[in-house]
Structures are given as C-alpha cells and as structure tokens.
Length: 226
Image (spheres, rainbow, N blue to C red):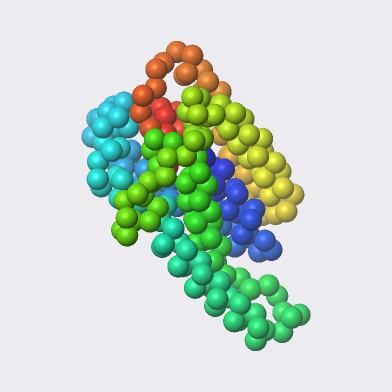
C-alpha cells in the first residue's frame, strides 16, 4: 500500500479525539517507508539511475534490514502493547470527566499502533518483495498472493480499491479536524491520489518496469518497495 494511504489511515484510526494524536498516527503510518526515501535520495544524489537503484541496490542487505526494522512486528508490537498498558492504567486512576489523554503514552500508542498497522497491511500485499517482519529472530518472508502494485497479482484492482479508500478516509478526516495543518496534509494526499495513479498508468503504457518501489513515489519512482 502506498505511503500516503498508510499516513491518513493512521491519522484516522488512532488520531481521535485530539489533533496531536492524529499527527502521531500519521507519523507512525509513514515511518516504515522512510528508510526507502532516504536511501533513494542518497543514491540519486550519487548519480545512480532508478532502474539500478530498485533493480540492484534494493536487494542489498543494508536496505533489506532497514525495511525489516521499519516494518518489524516485534518492535512495534512491543511498543504498542507497552504504551497501551500505560494508557489503560492512567485512565483507571483518572476522573471520567477530565479531558481525553493526549500525553506521551497516548501519543506513543498512536504512533506505534499506526506503524504496526502499516506493517500488517504490507505483510498482506507484497508478493515478491516482502519484508522480514520478524527479524532478527528469522529472515522468513511471506509471499502474498496479492500485490498492491503488480497487475499480474491483482495490482490494478488493488490500486483502484486503495484510491477509493484513500479518498474516503481523507473526507472523513477533513470533516473531523479543522486544524489548517491537517487539512493541508489531506489536500496534498488527495492531489497525490489523482496525480500518482495517472502518471503510473501513463508510464505502464510507455515503459517496462522491472524494479520494486513503494510508498508515495511508487509510480513516479518506477515500481515498488515499502
């Protein structure tokens, strides 16, 4: 699934009722993909082509380990469980009429739960480029029958589903929050939902893509990764 969908999904599911929790959920939603963007930017600055980056460098150990850490069930599961326990204990001693909890533990839960959700979704929609979600205990990867980008594994249908889901979530968030910053972020996501698929389908009609990529720059970068 593309990064912008993970981002707004995290904000929608874990951001209610406080805007600060929405930002934490959004940050957790995109964090697992950040290593990919950093690595791509660094390699591009060194003059490497996108074909070489995703056809060669992507499969290097350092990149695979970065993906494994970012999409790690053990890491995010532990943080989410610990922060949820702290939040629950705090609520048990809190007056029911007090304001919603927006402290450090609540933000840590929104952040880590969103990252865990991102990892779980990617676990289910990566075919040949799955991550080592249980690293360092094992390097096992799940090869899903569904790919969020590969047309030969339902990628086209999934892309249409994701676009519709993303627009729906963006509308819900836009109505929920009046915060200008959040609304600006939603506007940028909507633009991406329009621009990226258009570029993707145009590029499919004129190029042969053979390398993985993922996230917000899936189409623009060439193919998939996350």
